[in-house]
Image (cartoon, rainbow, N blue to C red; front, top):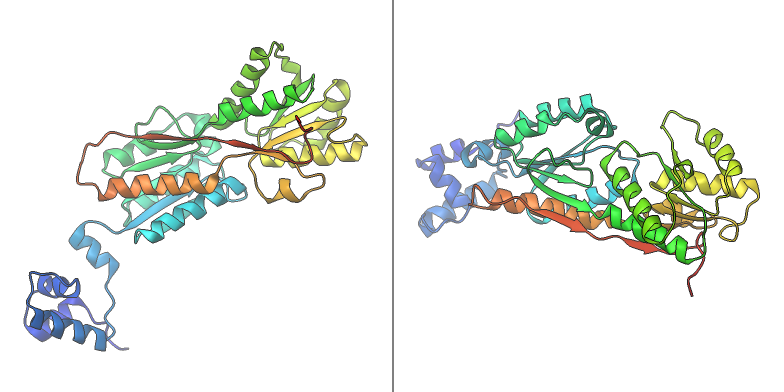
Length: 341
């Protein structure tokens, strides 16, 4: 098998140090033009490619970041990942991506595996299991070992680090207020994410909008659905036993499932029932009738998170203050809500 050309090999050919070869290939002004030209030409002729691991040992940086997301089936996380990959690529960084599938144990094991490898830092959205356990020691340990972390979307105040969050509470507030202003009297809330931080913030926004508009909070109009539950079995009697004329769904899946159940029941949308869901993925847009949604600008969230981490990695300041960026939401009106005009 043909031997791979290395910095050491080139240095031996020209009887110079490895550092001289490295600087020549990086066109350093410290090396003479004649020496640089000879080394660069030789490297080109012999198809030299830099060894990223060897370079990381010299530079103590790998230009690689780890991205840990809880659920690849959620369109928000897909969009966020696209944004992260874009910014990482533009800045010459590679990425390693892992999925926790909402498991605390898997999140811990992934962190342990990746932080012992060749990574410069992490971007993470906490799993549902981690937020239920409320144990964030694996994150604190990584930071204490010198690995910067940027949390996005699902975060915790128990760990000091950079964060990018969506204004979930205000998004739910505006959605609820929109339903009130369109004439809806009994607004129900459906959630499959009641255990995670964003679900709790959206619930808080829903309740605050009701109170601020002179409505009482009726706990019987709040339906929390466990992922193990049969959604239709719970929703059908819930709709029949209440005088509900609007639903705020706190995630994309429950919005689509609710829309399907309502259509099959014979009710008219939005005349008999209005719906607003969170996350502006493909499903809400292409079902009939299309679902009004709160968009969280997932791609922008990903871009901001990646840029914050890369800026910190490139910064010469070791103790710069942590930042928290808040991304605003927007309501996209479609066929499941009445027009305010």
